[in-house]
Length: 333
Image (cartoon, rainbow, N blue to C red; front, top):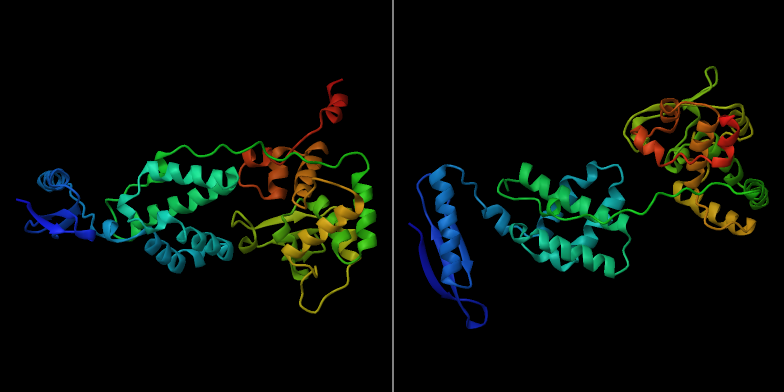
C-alpha cells in the first residue's frame, strides 16, 4: 500500500509526499500540493503494477529538458551532418523556460504554448518546425535509449505550423545576362559558380566541396560522395558542355578544391552581385530551382531529373521544378 507524508515545502507551504514500495519494483516517490493528488497518482501506479504494465517514471521525472539536451548535445549532435548548426539550436533551446521543466511534466499544451511564443517573437513556420523536430527527436531518444520508457512525446500531440508555399523564383527577362555581367565585373569565382549552378542543379554546399579528382573527364561525370549530400546518398552529376567549359577555364589549386569560396562566402558574393545587377528577391539557392526547371523543360523525365539533382523523392523534386505556362503552350499544339 502507498503511504502519504505531509511535509513543509518551499516557503513553508505544506505538501504531500507519496511513497510506493513493492517487492521487485523500484521505490516510487513523488510530491504533490494536495493529498488528493498524491492519492490519485499512487492509485494509478499501483494499478499499473497489479496489471504488470508498470514502467518506472523516475528517470523522466528527475531529468529536466535542459539535462536531456545536454546529453543530446554530447551523444547525438556530433553524428549529425550539420552538427554546428544543430548544436546552436540545442543551446538556444536550453535558455528557454520550458527547458527547466522535467521531461515527464511537459505536455502537449506546453508545446502549443511554446509554438505561440515563438510565433509572437517573429519566428517563421519553418524555424518553428525545425525547433519542434529537434524537441521531438530528444523525446524519442530519451524514451528508446535513455531509460525513459514511460515517456510520451508531447510534440506528436500538437498541430504544426503550416509552411508557406515553396519558392518559385526564376530568372525574369534579362536577369541572367545582367547577373553574369555584374559577376564578371565583381571578379573571382562567383561568375563561373553561377553558370555551374545553373548547369548542374547542385546544392551550394556540394559545389563548395568539389574536388578535381572526383571529375571523370572520359565520362563527363562528377561524383558527389555521400558525406557531402543532404540525403547521405552518393550520386553522379552528368556535365553539360557548358559545365565542362567552366571547369576548363578554372586554374588548379594546390589544395585540390575546385573553388576558392566556401559555402557561406558563395552566398555573400552572390548577394553583392545581385545588388550590382539591380536584381531583387533572388538567392543562390534559387539557381537550383532554375536548373531543375530547365532540365524538365529540355524533356528529361522526373526520374532523370531526380537522379541529377539528388532529391530524395519525386515529390520533393516537384517543389523545385517550376515550369512556365508560356513555355508549355507550344507543346499543346
